[in-house]
Image (cartoon, rainbow, N blue to C red; front, side, top):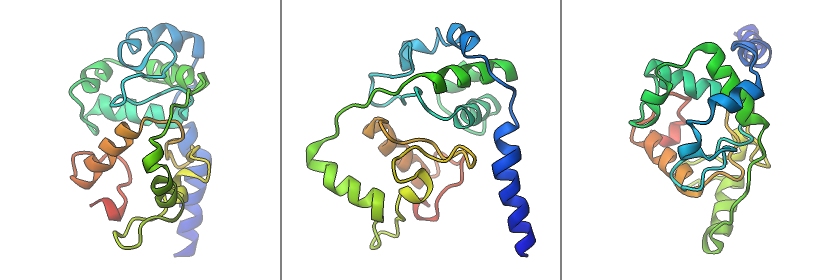
Length: 180
């Protein structure tokens, strides 16, 4: 059994990140014009229910666009937007958005300490593991495993996604056991 763990680890680290076409950020910038309506020109959406794409890992953006494209992830706005994207379109968009710098917002000061505690230590009573276990100590995520960067993301968007996982409305990623 241990040798299979090495095979899985090898796949996640060496093959999975390279399974999509190489993207061109300049081509992606042109293709992202339609994305700007919701995600802003540079990927830093101002609407707290829409994710910031700026600085997100290209691997994660590619996976999500593929999932919208194939129906593995459903959203009334994004599914039709991704329906006609080809492999190169997805790679270019991912390359563009990952090249942008995320603009951090301000956290609710009343929730900051509790959020930091759950992020670092989880919530044992609720069976919630520490977020940093997958998303890293600084919230930069894990590109090889396609865990997204969370640092700087809108709190309302993260909250909505966690609820969607818990309610099985979103199932396109490894759903943590605590969410189900």
